[in-house]
Image (cartoon, helix red, strand yellow):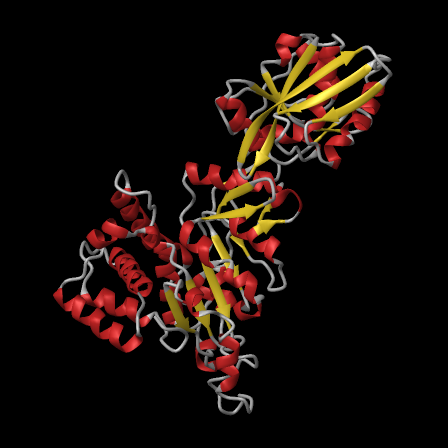
Amino acid sequence: MVAIAYSVAFEGVEARLVEVQCSVSPGLPGFSIVGLPDKAVSEARERVRAAFDALSVALPSRRITVNLSPADLPKEGSHFDLPIALAVLAAIEVIPHDELGRCVALGELALDGRLVAVSGALPAAMAAAEEDRALICPAPCGPEAAWVETVPVLAPSTLREAVDHLTDRTPLIPARPGTVITPALNRCMSEVRGQERAKRAIEIAAAGRHHLLMVGPPGAGKSMLAARLPGLLPPLTPAEALETSMIHSLAGTLTDGGIPRHAPMREPHHTASMAAIVGGGRSAKPGEISLAHNGVLFLDEFPEFSRPVLETLRQPIETGEVVVARANAHIRYPCRFQLIAAANPCRCGHLADPARACARVPACGADYMGKISGPLMDRFDLRIEVPQVSFLDLDLPADGETSATIALRIAAARSVQTRRFEGRSSARVNAEASGAILDEIAAPDAEGRALILKASERLGLSARGYHRILRTARTIADLDASEAVRVNHLAEAISYRLPFLAGG
């Protein structure tokens, strides 16, 4: 007789149902696992043996075969330990078959029978809900999985507790969701002295989720401005929070089962590899651009990143997803992020200061910024200069607008965008608008068209640059509570595209 348990295999953020079939048959004693298991899955048999010893259950002196079906789907990770153990227990009639068939299980086994936390509990709960089954997972994963309210989540601490529940000795109480994580954002825009134009650009970028490049000398405040961006962004909607948390669940970065409602901000170092940024490596894990989904990806010292890494950003910026190609699968991760980049104008950083610039001016700046290709530069909606702050500005009191005041304006502009796109487009913010919907919501008047024509001739705008100006102008109009995009909105949007950095 074949006993069947159920688990999941992860393909990107999707969890595919896997049948864990166990057969105990006559023959030489042995324990084999088939169905394209990786090393961690193959080693499960030793962890299962030790956990059974702790449970005082002896394996029969027969041939035990575990098949993970579908057999052509790669199985990776230690979370198959628990379903394999349960399938074996059902095959030797320790637990009933029918109870096991109503559950999806995942969890790693310690040698003493404890259940160890694994990544991916939230996507697994979503898959269990689609199959109308309960989920059995380790106790530390229970609060995370319980956010899927349509599925009963059972979170035993040990294999014995799972067996006692399935045999009705000691039923488990369903797990409760963790807490909503609300971090203390103690960095305020009022602390930024001077840089009024840069602060305005940050506000526009936050209101429409536009990509922003800041270029300026060291110490001008580029990183300081970027660090205050999360305090300006509105909280994630429940759908966005779930999308984002599923990616972080796969990466194992959720703590204590909490779901964050704030937009994530990722700040990888410029030495990060391509696999770290876009995803990949062993098990094709999500990269920084996917961990920044529905949030901010801040790349400081932008030209210092390797050229191949920077060029891989071009397609995800446009499509909102990244495909990690493998020999036997193509894994997709969502990555709808807002790119904020900061760069020095040249390698020494003092291109605009004749007293401090190196002898290679202006070739130093051209070579340094030339590391950023024109097509990538063209994808920034706003490109601004952040000049050095004078000592007079630094000596002024911190009496500028607070982050809370600016955030109210941004929230109002975002709510206008939500109502505008609801039921009409897949776009959520102005930066995502395209095609007919963009022509409708950001159509310039005759005076505006004349201005854009003049700017196009002078700046050499590409078609992409033209559309990005329209999106930015629409956001500026939303901040001004204007129904129409007027010439002053277009003029300000055009002023945020530095012509000497790229063509358009």
